[in-house]
Image (cartoon, rainbow, N blue to C red):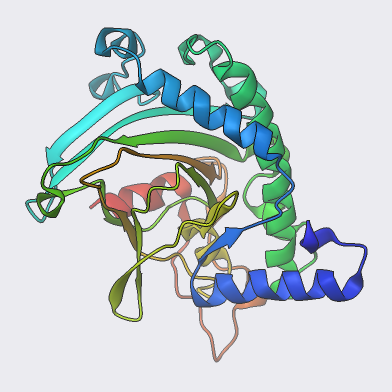
Amino acid sequence: KGINSEDLEVREKCREELRKAAVDWGVMHLVNHGIPEELTGRVKAAGEGFFGQPIEEKEKYANDQAAGNVQGYGSKLANNASGQLEWEDYFFHCIFPEDKTDLSIWPKTPSDYIDATKEYAKQLRALATKVLAVLSLGLGLEEGRLEKEVGGMEELLLQMKINYYPKCPQPELALGVEAHTDVSALTFILHNMVPGLQLFYGGKWVTAKCVPNSIIMHVGDTVEILSNGKYKSILHRGVVNREKVRVSWAVFCEPPKDKILLQPLPETVSEAEPPRFPPRTFAQHIKHNLF
C-alpha cells in the first residue's frame, strides 16, 4: 500500500526500497501489498486441497507435455543435469486475462478453487501494474512504460504454477527445482511458510526467510532485458524438506510469445552502457535459455 500512499514521504521511501531491491537482489518480500489475507488464505487452501486428493482424481487433470499441452497437473521426479533428483508435483494454468484462460482444465474440487483463483488473479494483476510503474519511474521513464512494453492489460499473461514438494527422506539427494532465472517480467510467489527458496547472491546460496503474509516477488529476465541489466533477474532454486511438505504458488507475468521484440529500451542504453542483450522475442528467449 505504501507505494501509493497519500503521504509523499512514505510513498517515496517505499518506492525507493522497491527500486533498490530490484537493482541489488532482484527479489523481495512485498508486505502490506493490499491483497487481503483472507483471499490468499483461500487460494492456499484450494491448492492444498487439490493436492490432498487421491492420485486418480489429480490424474483427471493431467497435462500432455508430449502433445505440447503444458496446462494441467504434472509430476516431475527426474534427474537434473547435476545428477540430483527433482522432486515435485505441480499444477500449471493461465489465470489472466480471462479471455485467455481455459476454465475447463481448472480443478473443480475443492469447490472454491476457481472463484478464489480468479479473484486473486485480478488483484495480483493490479499489483503488477503498481510494481511496473515504480520500476519504470526508477529508470527515469513514464510510469506506464514498462507495462506497455510487456504487453499491457490485453497481452501480459499471468501463468500460475502450484509447486507441491513432498517430504523428502534424503533432501541432500534431491532438489525441488534446479537453479534457474525466471524468464517472466515479474513473478509473484505465495508459500506455505516452509522455507525452501534459495538465491545465488554474492557468490553463494542464501535461503530466503519466510515472512508472514508477504508475497515474494522476483524481477524476471524480461524486465532485466528491458532495463539493460539495471534490474536483476537472480539465479534461484527450490530445496526440499525432510519433515514438511512445501507448497508454493508462483504466478509468472509473461509478455506475449511473438508479438513483442524484447531488447534494452533506448533510454537505458548509452555509450558508456551499450546494450547487453540482443533483440529477441519472448519465445526465442525461452528457447535460448533452455539450451
